[in-house]
Image (cartoon, rainbow, N blue to C red; front, side, top):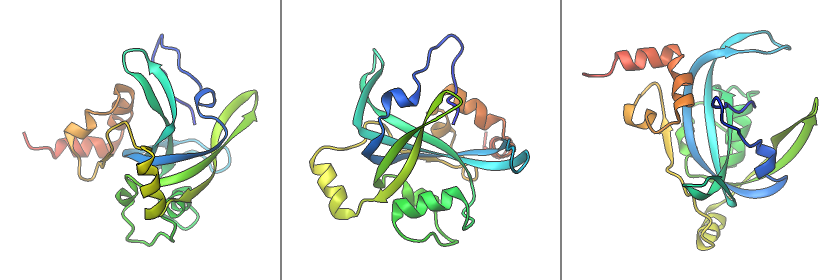
Length: 196
């Protein structure tokens, strides 16, 4: 996944702050990105509805900004917004909730879910990437133990849906992500439907 960058701002590659191995993760944000062109050498370029899932990693602390001090690392990835049986999102959801995903599954139910992610670093064309090797759900007992150890999220958790759009939630996103969402036809329709 390519991380967006701000002009003139140096970004830290994920592999420098997310080590390979297992760590506790909390699903902290579920963001409807709308429909965008998704390029693929194997399947051709297609317009796809995308969703971004952010996981907070409270056991991995780093200073990303001096004024904010130490914060939990975040692992975010964009997925095709599809719960088809072969879709990557279906597998991710099933692993987090540890049961098969039915047609009526509401992806918002993953918010606040604790899980254990095993990360791996892969090198391709001299680029090191952080990938999820496996996800294991945490039952209520394991989650309670994590809470006892103060393994909690630092950041606000929320869902942004373009089908039930909330302007205030949208404004909580970083500017680069707002711009990406604003390029989608779903966003255009959502803001047209807003009451004045």
